[in-house]
Image (cartoon, rainbow, N blue to C red; front, top):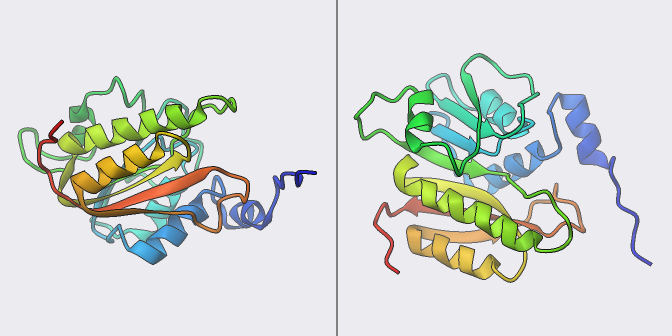
Length: 207
């Protein structure tokens, strides 16, 4: 018999106690502890940021010179400082220039984000979730070309399935190194993996 899903485990309770909007905060904290993808002075773009727990982590741990921008279709409900810029919108429809402007980069400059992160997931139905998740990740990789500086880093969630190896392979072509990890804060029964990638090559992709 399958094990019952534990909705209120220790990470849920810890998030409530420490003021994070969701347990996912601890996924980012754990991966950051292992990989050091984000520096205190970085400009970071959070794609699919609601309810805002990853933005809270950035707000708390990055230095005063950092730039933090997030976008989601849904409203961000987390408590954040004024330095965090949040946008309501669709990552498939929003022009990349909007993100650069939100970060305060001068128009016409070559300034780009240092890190792109994404905890996005589709509305799961149990059928084709892996393909919808892969499509979100492919969009994140597409956006790297206009938004991520050469040498920059990436972290994004994907639901394991048939298209997953292809997404990972593309990340490995675009970055100097890439791999996957599953933090302890992920639920045991979850199909989620996190793709990390370091050293964006910034080169046009070949078919």
